[in-house]
Image (tube, rainbow, N blue to C red):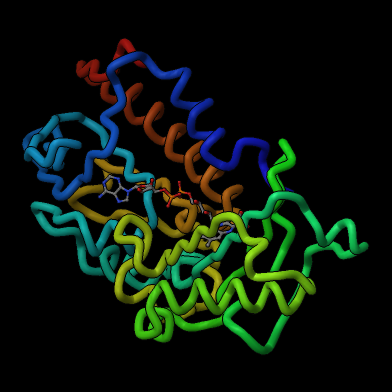
Length: 266
Ligand SMILES: Cc1cc2nc3c(=O)[nH]c(=O)nc-3n(C[C@H](O)[C@H](O)[C@H](O)COP(=O)(O)OP(=O)(O)OC[C@H]3O[C@@H](n4cnc5c(N)ncnc54)[C@H](O)[C@@H]3O)c2cc1C
């Protein structure tokens, strides 16, 4: 099953409900510093300028391994939590996908499903990726490791994928109108060097993700931290619900104690 409009349609729908001006796009968080009852977040904005903002609570909605590798904490995160973040594989981060777009889904005309598994060639698993609006496409997961992909290079991989699809579906390489190759292991906002090696699926664990020092100020909401379906989209939704519940509980407590941060947003 796939979502009409792609998974970005979920993000757009959620963003549409947020107050205007509350979203900073294309910004990369680089550091978090405890300052009294606040956290000061440092980030690089879309124009490349260093910026910061303050808040009493911060939700980190990204894979814990990526958080540990790319965001510096002052004071440092306790070693038990840092090790747990580092040792939690980001599901599917070591993988890459290839898409080939066509004028029409010719495989259906031949009575073929568009699905294939192969022990030979760069693509190990192929599926029909034709969109709901009828744009014909096949996509496949690469069977090559991140190391092999890096040494082969994108151009050679794409040429080889096109040839394999032509062979599998009895078509011509020239039938391909456009291609899209996405290597998540090389995506700095998804994977770290540790994700270059395929790992087991993350296991659900209800233990705390944040220890002494930071536990009252930050919440982790990446899918991998979910107690249900970690690593999956469903896990991301579940982790977000848990993070929202923790935040509301904390803010209620601080308000009872006299502090009323975020009052307008609750
Ligand atoms: C190849 C592949 C195939 C997959 N297939 C499936 C599937 O079939 N079914 C399924 O359920 N799940 C699948 N997944 C997993 C699914 O994508 C994840 O479960 C889901 O995206 C996790 O959502 P998330 O919000 O926790 O984190 P993410 O989607 O990883 O979102 C984290 C966000 O944080 C941003 N970010 C990272 N670092 C920073 C920073 N320093 N500052 C600011 N922003 C930052 C990133 O750009 C990203 O937008 C797949 C993943 C991959 C890579």
